Length: 115
Image 1 (cartoon, rainbow, N blue to C red):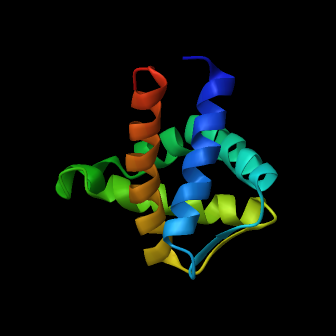
Image 2: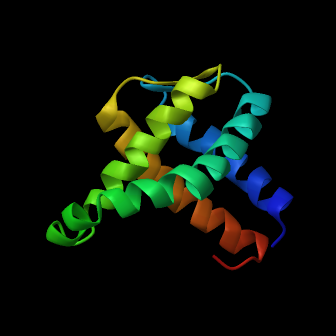
Image 3: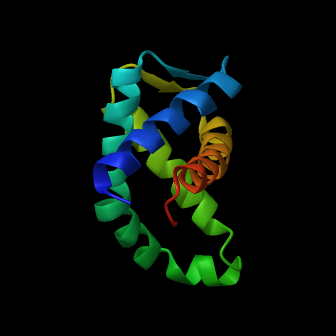
């Protein structure tokens, strides 16, 4: 599955997830969702590996559950970087990352791609 198609699917997943978590997570428009998907892709490619490496001992002790915290931090960082995307706090960012991962996986499966 091509990069642009993955960004498009992630943008749709972000819009749907924001709709599900409506009072606490806000995405202004589809263009904002596209920018959010692109920023998340960049943060996941550049920042997340560094955070995983720095927190490796904690991740081992928590049997990988600390990766959810890292995902929430990435969402909060994206909320700071993308105008028009708002998350009300850490727990909403954590829930957003979990729901968006599930929705994204389902949409990629429907699109015929592999994760």
